[in-house]
Image (tube, rainbow, N blue to C red; front, side):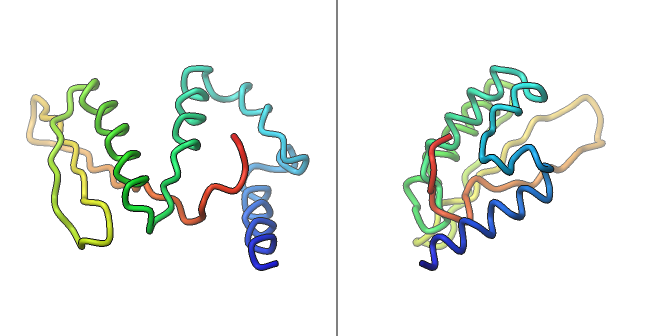
Length: 117
């Protein structure tokens, strides 16, 4: 019972962000806004169970994101964290000047996967 309530609230929050196109729970409208290659990557990522407490799933997601970053010229640094969580991953790409941009993101999901892509 609780899971359905969480799912319903999640879908409602996404509907508010994405608009009524999601009401049918059909994500096919995304192809209008996102290139096919990126949709394939999103599908790949959504198939990895990266619930916060699933250390191996989060690590798998971090490995995949690290591969992508390395392909873009980033050097990857691993910082060990608490034993129950995946490590912190830092991607660094040096530029031609001392100016920099910091992007902070995460590879875990709040909820366990509950539906197919």
